[in-house]
Length: 180
Length: 143
Image (cartoon, rainbow over all chains, first blue to last red; front, side, top):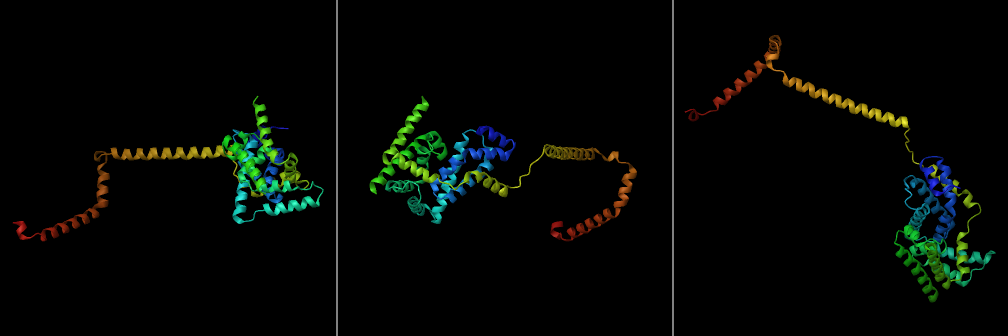
């Protein structure tokens, strides 16, 4: 298995360009997709954004200077694409979040999946009411277990800013739970 | 040491969230978001590459020979321009050095013969002009 750096060099030197790109994609596609899906909820939207992210990677990989880790750069592009998508969705007034929450409740009761408890629904609603940046930071920290330096590079803030975002997210979730 | 600190920090942060929601709830939340259609990740790279090939801008790649040919043409054009400009200024300076003594009498005579009628016309125009200037002068001015 080649390292990210080796695959990038191969791509940049036009040695089996498609093959090295595919290997790079296969290494990271799951994490990127899940991070996007946690934000936009709908599979088709997440799929479309993920495709856009990888097309951008293809177009910009020649200029990647490896000053940061590839995964950090990749998540940063995913972060920007996701925020752009959500902003566009807000402008058009076509947010999927509410309908998806209803689907989620119905799906859980119909399938063998563990039944969604009241707290589950609240968690979903609570996370969804967080500002997008805090949502993203919360997911990266809790589920991807990234360190704050990496999160700060991805979201374009300072380490302190990233920490503050995480703790504000938790605080807001706490307040949301108290209110409901 | 640093890794330990990061791990401690991560556990503390996770604990903050787990005090609100149980680990199970958070895991369930994540699991639900992870659901994808079967074979999705197996076919994803093909979908991306397909879109890339459809949107690929026509990039103009130059081979080494192509680059050398362009460089050769550039050098040729620059050298030609340099030689031409150099010769042109040399011809100009050669002309500036020629004096009337260097021109033979035959050459001067043939030039005069060829241009005599022009000189005649110039002389007539000049004399008509002078006459009209004199007639416009008043007597007082002559006095």
